[in-house]
Length: 413
Length: 135
Image (cartoon, rainbow over all chains, first blue to last red; front, top):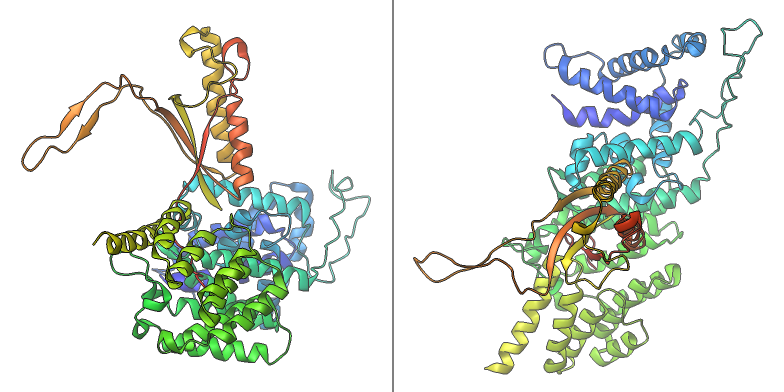
């Protein structure tokens, strides 16, 4: 059973059914049914044309469900004879799904779940395990997302939807059917940002359950980059690759967090780093800077240093200046303060930190680190304890606790 | 998406507004309370936000290690503890504001006279897995 093939075909087949006139929720249901049948049939009787097989079975599933609504029978049967789409149409179908699944009326949790299912081809069970919620809960999250789209997004039709041929002698009830809502064209630029934020959320969740969400996010972003010509899509892909390349060095075998300066750089995936840098350089050359390109540039400078002391901190500060200019993000300002501390000395970093809201996540941790480098271990130890208490995740809390213990041990001895 | 614990206390939380203990309610009021809890959990499952809900017995035992080769030392029941957890609900929501909103609704479970208890619930964020983007 080629699960990767099934998952790659999922958004394509959903897109084809949508273009034939099925609404997104019905198309998604039909494709899930077709996938179940594929898992059952293909091991003994593999099809010559997997995509064609799925389209045929999926469309039949859709028609079976639609036939319960007798008023629509005539229109569906006419559509059934439609010819198969070409490759360009396939790419457009999948691209439309990205925007649909990242519709602004969806909550982030719903957009993430729907993207992983419809574009990623993951099962509800896989997504539920990845996010550590019961399968029933994830099923409801996906169902509600689909209902939201049916109600608000309208039908994701192709640019020239067929005019409805309504006649007085149609089937009973047909004349009273409400007109399909006019499809709302995507504002591509705005929606690209939403799609990228969804993919970023998937990537940042990392790994849990039996699905590597970071790898899945990379696959989906790579697919999106192949279908679009947007430098921020390339920027996000580069950012993901540059971080993913360093993952093996980020945690010790016992789960302990390894700070960047102490990572074994021999564990970094240099091929992935080279790919990320290449993609980023091509994007930057187009001179349409965005936040993901700026973040990727910072990650590239870290990845480019063979040893910690070779890190180009002044240039990293400049990129943080760009990022702050683009986003005004307090988190970017905080990271910039740490970089200033590395480039210009810990006192300069502490001065930059003093301008920021102390309740920012990781503000206390940054302050502890800079105080230690400034030669004030007593203050640093006290701040590490406070930072550990405020840490958002377990490895970080343990790391900060260990720093406090290290400094306190030094003072005790 | 983040997970939060909505923690209920037998004692240890501030006194609620409607503080008549459950053993002084009418049977109908107890049934109303239990139905509210079930309906609340079902609604959260419907919104894709439910993770878990459990109730704990007020009786328990303290246990500690007593050295190599010895059985653990036990002490109980809990007679004098200041804080006693009654149960919890775990939710998976988009943000902290949503967690507060749901805790507020859960706090309105009916009590004596069918009136909301206004129970103080402890909202605790889960420590997450570390993010993939770190610098």
